[in-house]
Length: 452
Ligand SMILES: Cc1ncc(COP(=O)(O)O)c(C=O)c1O
Image (cartoon, rainbow, N blue to C red):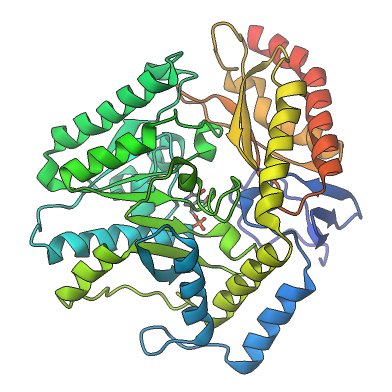
């Protein structure tokens, strides 16, 4: 840099952003040469196979040399065709059509529109409303933000948000209406709440229910066993399409290709992004049940919205190379093993700490909630700066981690761990040890600050 103040308008203009200059595998270096081990896959969860890989660079370069660009409105490309086929083969039976996007928000917008086209094709034009979970996150574009159940994010934009999005309390058993319930009862009650919301809106007006299998915005709370099966039944009963947002959880992050595969439930529309491009290229995908696509096709309806970089040959070539790497290196199996190890490490070293409320997650999608009072399950006040101080302490110990202050009635300060499928087990071990040491150092400070 030339010594002048940055011209970048940062997301949080008052924050200082470290300047990263290099990355290899799960290690990053800043301009001062300071090394960080990444426990987050680039914070967003995208860099699932590590950084700086020659195989991905080569695939990208080869594609750019051969054919760098063609708008998908006018033609198709080999990478787009091949990646669609690979994803359809990986998806549950009956899900055999794929539309690409440049990321997760866009994929969720497309899902919303595909659902609308489906209902129009079936002669049900009155179906347009959406039911989603709160907390939950579906992206930052207007439609995705409207479906997002995070008031701290979408409050400022309320005048622009879509009407007709009904939020239902996420099936969390740590706090809120399902607090402390046994799995079966929690699943039942949460599904009844979904049913009641659809009934309340008028079932014939509801287009989709959209949900994440495990959400960062819930601090990785895992919905109770049986919940997704009941969701499927409720949606089927009302003719509502079930859209599963696997933008974070897909691509074997939980040990299976899709997190919903653990529940043996198939969504009508599934969205993927992040790990699909591995942090190397902007890429998202919408996986569509054949019956939904066929209904739209039978009426010759067309999706008007394509974006300039939807299904870009270069991004799809990267997606194919990411899948090749996952297959060649057995990363699906590794994800399962490392996920189990991470869960054990957190259970052993973090769960019992006095300032930790609950450890939760699945596979390499883990999190824990920090609590001012474990018994009462109360969270720290924002003035304790728990999230910021824990992230800083981890960085001082050489780890890139993510802790967010959610500040809602259901989630307070939650740390989330989304390491790459390629992370070394020693890095997990040392990362959790650093987390424990950081919490032990900071816990008394948080306590003192919250008593003020
Ligand atoms: C579950 C989920 N859905 C959608 C999105 C939006 O994806 P993108 O940022 O690629 O638009 C995100 C991003 O964090 C996400 O976590």
